[in-house]
Image: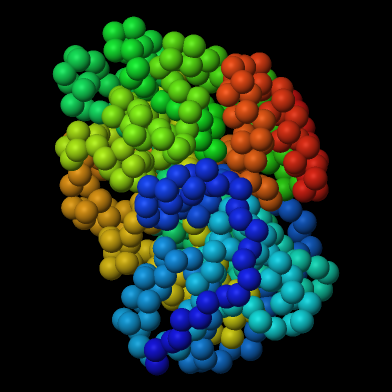
Length: 466
């Protein structure tokens, strides 16, 4: 049975986490896939209260219709599943409440919990949604998201996701979502110019810093990075293992921006900003692509930069842009990197057809049939290999990006935690204006930390600043 495609009414509050990126992407007619639905975060697996109610499935009705809420980018995938499984009854609803920072989905679930009906069976959202969906919205109700590791998804399937990619889904000892895609940070570079100028691709942060200053002297106007976008901190400070968002307990956030891993990152970037090798203008800011897009020699950023920044926004010719693995600090053997995006699929604990709902989210996230042609890098390792073999995803680049992408996928640092609030708000409201005013990152760290702390407390967290 074919489903109807319905549209929700009313608009959710826009997510603040990708506002600048979304605005620029729209202006450039970029795919909304570049947004990746929200910031995927890390280490939140610590156990909370042990007295949380045991998952009790609703009365199951085999063959009953499932309602699926999806964003427009993932809509074709859901429709593809429906076409391949005509016996599954589905009502597909497109909505934009999955954006990180939006409370639309949470508000709706709170309403459904009060009325006792209305929950969708499957929902696409951001990792921020999992922080509340894994807990009861009020006493006496069970969490919206079903624990998928509780007899729904086999453990060998869960083990097939990239290392750490399911961490944002894990609370209270259970896994409440499946990761759709990840946006692991790699080093992008213009291979044509690097070869022409005789530069070696850096493998350490110190080499990156030295090359950036050399470029500033020998080729003024060319850039090796930007800190001006709403997600730039995820590329640099997350990769630098800065404990800006470290949940040491489910209810306790450590944010210590005077930690040496934070100050060394800020100091390195300040030197490159002073040298005019790193810009404080955002890659996605208005006019940047036209004025400076062709002068970006290197960019430390997510896996989707290749298609959605260099190709779509900067119009860089094919076979010019290449990717290298994440950088390490001298003396350190293991790289750590950040993550700038990635959405999740959740199954409702209230679903009367858990079998169909679970099969759908498993197919969406793990099947080669779907993920090989997905707009962004799959979190499921085997599906990611199929994605990389698709010429549409790899043929544009000057090198084989597989090694860099696959290595980085397993090196996303899990010390940057998924919280109930967006990690972009404080960066956008405090740090970016300070940079625009000419202040250094190092001098702005205390104000950034204070804003994060205030936000955390407003969302009910205890805060540790050391």
